[in-house]
Image 1 (tube, rainbow, N blue to C red):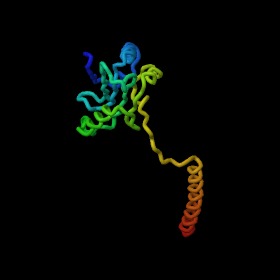
Image 2: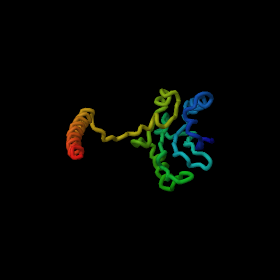
Image 3: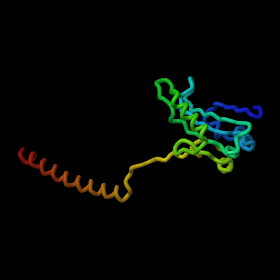
Image 4: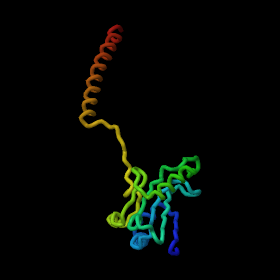
Length: 174
């Protein structure tokens, strides 16, 4: 890359966290502050492989607001599921590009991490380490679940008594 250069690589997702030589390369690139973004793509979008892929975007001279930072984008759900393979539609590509340009954290999708955050994770660039999915659950509390279970148990005992009563009428007529 020249002084204004930008470069991207498409790699299998596991290249983000494998140890050994790849780990040392990641660490060296991070120390040079060349990595601008890590974009996770959905699985099965490349012909002949069902593996999930990622795009690593590098820039020789990052702007001041991006120095010491890396943008992580989880685009794994931004695909159209097909029969034999999945597809990145134009609206998916636009969304990924908009997130890349905005360079901001967006809940469930993107996270701007500092190089210190990454170093604390042993230079592991696995996207789920940084982009946390907020799982909204509508599960009841333990107390409410126990009360519901108790009510259901009591109702089942009443229903069983009624069933036995009705059944005994049929069996006593024989």
